[in-house]
Image (cartoon, rainbow, N blue to C red; front, top):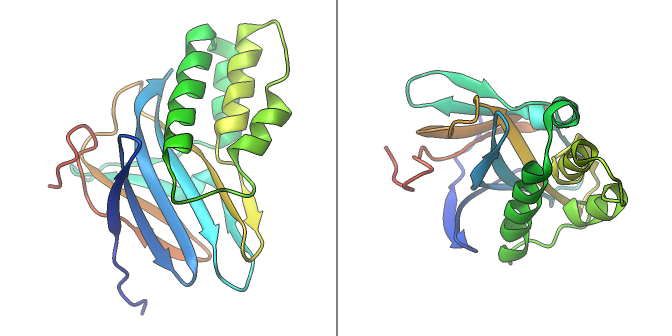
Length: 193
């Protein structure tokens, strides 16, 4: 049986973060104050302080609502596909400005394999706003990543909610490396239930 780990909560850059460490892996997240198309967005950062590699993917995340419903995070390719189909300039502005506010306002973690390197790779000059929206999502989205010991990454995790907030509930991340269960909260007010 796993020992109980303590969730630490803090504010940075106007966002409320929760962080939890298990077996040398630290995971933290914050609700981003916007949605894009039909997705609510969480900013997630992962740091591997363990000796072994650690693999994480967006589909490992589930939001458990207070009413008992579960929402599984969408794979990055699904989000990118939706933005190729329906994306616009507003989506690009929302994605980039909101995520950069979260990333650069967060001083506790300096990712070595995250958004900044992906942004430079994917946000080349293109004329189509749909392609730009998809490129922004590609750069921002947490993708399946195998982190070697000592490395970290960050990214946005998208939850299909028909464009509505996630509401009251808690984030749970489960994969072969273990389970991270965070405190219950109401993201709009920051109050626990």
